[in-house]
Length: 148
Image (cartoon, rainbow, N blue to C red; front, side, top):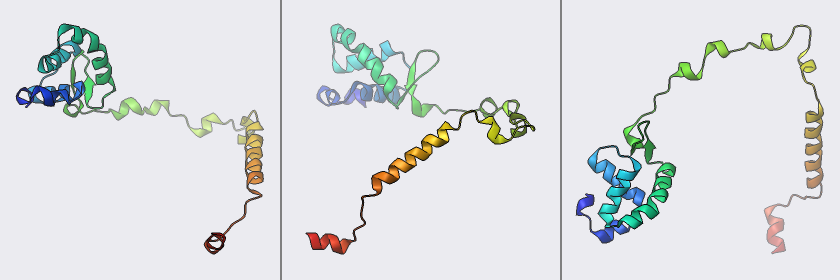
């Protein structure tokens, strides 16, 4: 329990860890200012330190995987929320276009490519790689041991 921890032990924890413990113990959601105010109260930090460090605290909350910012502007622990995904929002049959519609019957698939230079570049890259490995020799372990 946070309120029973010594100030010395609290000072060993990060602000976000203290905030996480606070939210878990109190089972409530809080905005950034109120949450950091509680952290400061637990650490006996004065108003100047509160003002100087609240922006860094906010940044820590936003980058932490433990917290989630809710639509109402309050923070809560991510573990208290599940993400519901509506597959209809992600995959809509009306967006589907058949291959037959993409390629005209009069044209072959190759005619749809405007530029074959990509294939030429790829071929050149493979040739360059092969040239780089021409001077390499395969050596087995026995030959390595003999050299040492």
